View 1 (cartoon, rainbow, N blue to C red):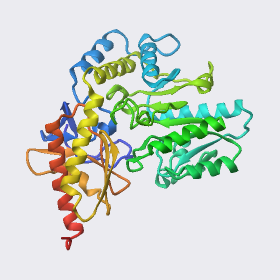
View 2 (tube, rainbow, N blue to C red):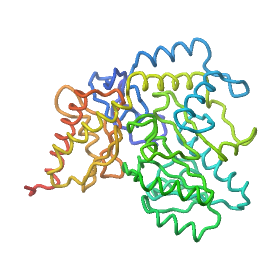
View 3 (tube, rainbow, N blue to C red):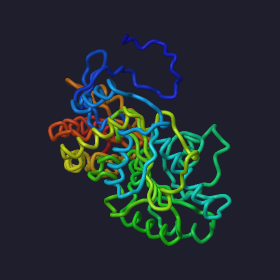
View 4 (tube, one colour):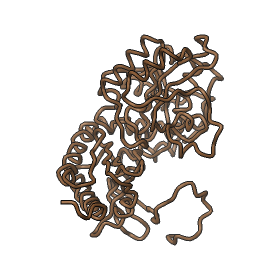
Length: 405
């Protein structure tokens, strides 16, 4: 049924007025038959695009044998995936769950228990302005966004907030707060507007955490899984975190989350400390294994780096001289193009792009066009994405700055 009639779905999203019906590669179609270039990948989820033959075959095969059995029994795919993830991350063990929020919640629990084990009665965790870690009561308390928090007070205590890329601010906290157990940071803030933690800043945090006995917890939920050209965005800084939440792109659309740990953090959870009914089920872990294998076999990390650079260069060439263009941030296929005015209307303009196809894009923090395409995007598709974006953004900025030269 394609009519946009009254829905009984809770209105937690202001949905765009289309029903997507199917996809192929980096393209999707709505129920009316219109075609769209997918520049969002389900918010960094559809790593392998749509209807990828290897992924579809793996999910179908697994569904025929075993979808779910619970963690009361050993799960072979789960153990194989844990081996694979710890190997590429240089970490020790993994807890599997169902989403980024759950992975981040598990990380917060690890940090608190780690603090208690070291004699801290009320452990504190350093978090960031403009951070986003989820919408549970604990993760929205860690999030640096008043809109997300409003109406859900009282927030969970135990968080100390600092600005991004300011090591002196963290050092000041170290001098004044004796109960810090961990630092919790996104390698690249996603919802916050594609704000990367600088390489030297991440290295400084690693050094400070080592000196203080704090856990360095790096949220790779949106920026991980090959999106920036490395398995995990923090690997550009040649560091290893103590705790690392993953989700989104890990299984190319099948819901999964994971939190990896190493060293002392890997020994925090004992039987009964944490759990999940669906987490690490045979279907989700099979999809993740196939995603990892395909990223490697098809060189998708190298592709993300190359295609991301092409998109960045194309957008700079087409827009950098326009009044109202601020900058492009990010790495690989995680890019944010900031304008000087709120530009949410560009999302609808992209859907309605004149010609044979529209585009799926996103605007975050009101003024940042966020691009998170599937890692399989090729050079020709990147050119199509750039051409469409330059067209709608140029037209938009011309209206905002009518007297610009």
